[in-house]
Image 1: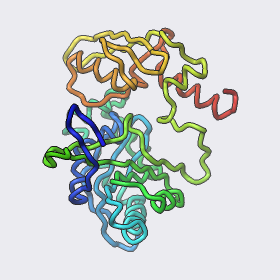
Image 2 (image 1 turned 180 degrees about the vertical axis):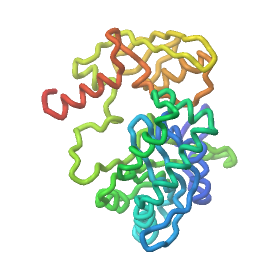
Image 3 (image 1 turned 30 degrees about the vertical axis):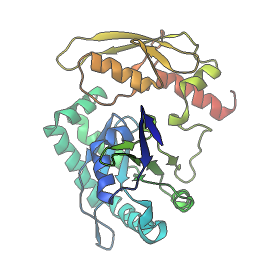
Image 4 (image 1 turned 180 degrees about the horizontal axis):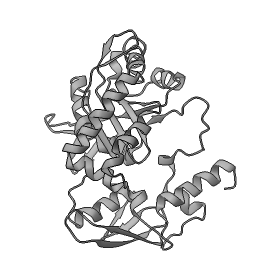
Length: 311
C-alpha cells in the first residue's frame, strides 16, 4: 500500500497487456536509462520465415547494449506463452536481415529526431560515425528486456536458463482505494532491473553496476561523508551552469536545500534548474569529485576491487 496524506493506493492488476506496453513506451528512459533510444514495433522473421513483432527495440548508448523488448503479464503463463514467444523473437532478432533493418531505422531516427541526435552528441558520436557505432552495438547479442507486472519463481528459473542475458523489470499498478480512476505506476529506481542474468560464461561481480550505491563507496573508504560533488551542465542554447552538492553519511546527496536518495535524482534537479526539460539523467556520470573523476569512475574502482577480493 502507498499512503499519500489520507489517500490509500493499493496494488491493482493491469486491464490488459497493452496498458503495460503504453506505460513502457511513455516511460522507457526510466527503465533503460537516459542514454537509451527506443525503436517502434517492427516485424521481424525467424530463420524459418515465421513473423514476430516484439513490443520494441532499445539501444543504450552508455552501456553499448541493445534490447529486445517484450512487455508481458505473468498471468499469460511462463511456459505456455512467454517462453515460446521470446524464443521466437530472439531467433528472429539475431538474423542479419533484422539487424540491417534496425540499423537503418536508427540512422533515420537520428536524422529526423533532435532528441535522439542530442543523445548521440552527448556521447561524442558524430553524424559520420553513427552507422558504424550502431552496427558495432548490434553485432553483440541482444539483452532480453521484459517489463512485467509480477515475477514468479518459474519466470526467474526460465530467465536463468537462457544463454542470452535477461533483464526483468517489475512494474506495479496502484489505484486509489476510494477512487479507482486515480492510477499510479511504480517503476524501479535508477534504471535497475528486478532480475538480471549474465550471459553464459561471463563472470559477475558480487555487485552489478546498478547495485553498487554511494553508501557502498563510503563504506569501502573510496568516498567520505561531507565530500563536495560538482556538476557542470549546459542546456542547448543556454549558458553553462555549475552546481555543488554534499555527500551525506548515508549515501544520499544534499543539494539545493533537499536530500536526494540517488545521484541521478539530484542531477535531474540541477539540469531542470538550468533550463533543460529532460526527464532523466545519469547522475553517476554527471557528478564529479575534486580530482575530476566521475562517480561512475569511483564505482568502477569499487567493483574491480570487490571482484578481486581486496575490499
